[in-house]
Image (tube, rainbow, N blue to C red; front, side):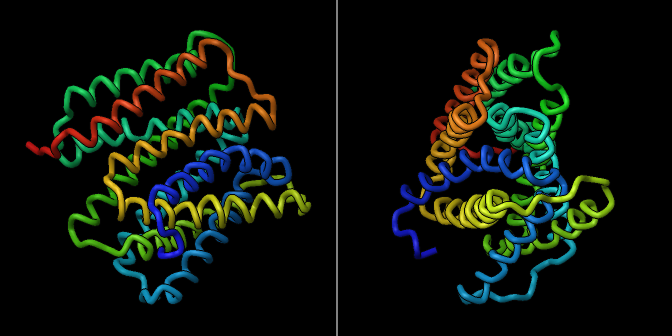
Length: 294
């Protein structure tokens, strides 16, 4: 963690990695089917993070194995399967915006499972995000890929459930974030590896392009990105760190438009604008709103 001295620099690099990672994932899918690519990506990421444990003086023994296996299934297996499948079926930038509705589902789940009060500003953000989703999905017409939309929203929901699980685990008995991330990813790989063998898919084309993209999304986007995010959260206010991640969906949209000529229609642009405004409202508000419970 000491490799990055300035948390702001860390969050900028992380946002670029996470934003461009969606386009790089789409490139990887040219040469590999979604489930095989997801299994390979997460296996490499897990190996990278596990290697860091002894190098950073942490214990190699997994803490609270049963809880981490369930977290790994939700926060790794399901999340990455749904998001990769969504990108394989649709636009990388469009998928990124829909997956990033995760904070709004987190607020709703926190109300249900943690009895947290939803503040007025949060309701405004939720309504704006819902309008944005409807405009992007456009359920009244046949434009776009509705399977990709459903998978993207599903990934956002699963990401939110994982966030609630992490919060509950940390409130009960705090765990080191790097150890928790490394082991949840490792345990989450087990179902993914099994799925990659069970689901009939095309063979991987081991081109130079594929290997380069695999290393980038596995080590750079997932491995290094996770480290930078943990470092930023440890050194910045949560609201400030969250605000900085808003750059990821626009970066995904711009990079996918440049690389794949994936251009949204006018209604989709308005939908993305609504989601971006909702995220900004939530991030600014999180620095002012008190944390309350019933």
